[in-house]
Amino acid sequence: LVKVPPALGALPMFSKTAATGLASKKPPPAYRTKPMSSWTVEDTIVFFKECVTEKKKVLNNIRSKEVDGDLLRAMEDDEMEEHIGLDGLMVKKLRKKMDGVSRDEEAENKIAALITFLEKIHLSQYHDRLVNDLGVADLKELPDLIENADFLERLALKFAEEARFKNAVRQIMHPSNTQTTLQPQGGKGSGRDTGRSGMASSRR
Image (tube, rainbow, N blue to C red; front, side, top):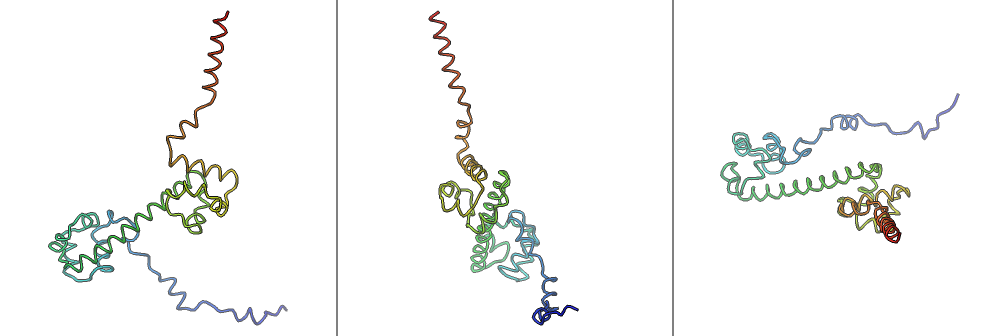
């Protein structure tokens, strides 16, 4: 019989509490998973409960006036006070939270654009390294970075991948330049050949 070493036999097990906590973990509220312009009235109410106020009068006003995310973004401060029932302090608090949501959306959109870019050039496997390890969060950062030897070394692309990556960055930032570089050089050469043949025929 093989004896189990004491150290292995004493390995800790997950407690019932920990297991229950993992199993009962709730998904984030819907308003956190979509842009503010797509919030429903109920999404807006949940946002107010979590970030602004739980006053029933305010929440009831949001529901009765059918204030969704798109309408909320369009409202002026005095309209929020009149139609939703917020006081001046609540309006300031709401504006601060809304600014935070907008910044998060903008950052997410930039990351999404970066992921789409990598997918188009078949380099999506480098997404984590590019975003999480190297801290790149915007396509606009790439033109300067592709000229940085240290960045390219840390990104660790293969030779062909690096060439494709650099070319794609230059194309997406300067699309007009790609048309000139893609023109075949034979066009100029053929012009010279035509000129020569014309000169030869004239001599004859």
